Image 1 (cartoon, rainbow, N blue to C red):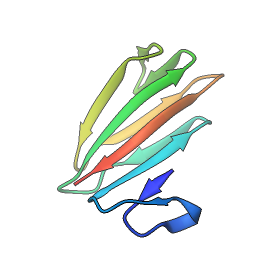
Image 2: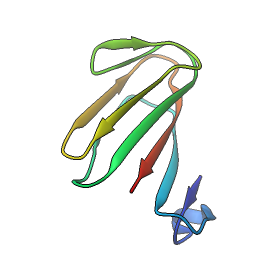
Image 3: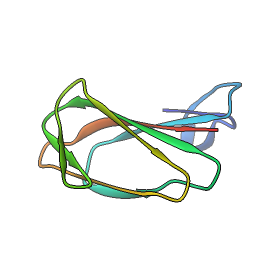
Image 4: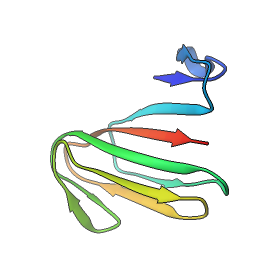
Length: 81
């Protein structure tokens, strides 16, 4: 969706942040020194086994692994410096 360098046809932003749209179950690893904010947009998902409803969010810090699972996954992943 958005990134500092416009990678993969994303909107170029002048911030140390990358925003991705997640539409399938996936595993994300947070790099050291970074934070990951997962905002559930639609559907009932589980993040590391915990339910996260529409409009809810979770945050992870560097070195953590996030597992997103659900049948109708639609969430935004904010990778923040």
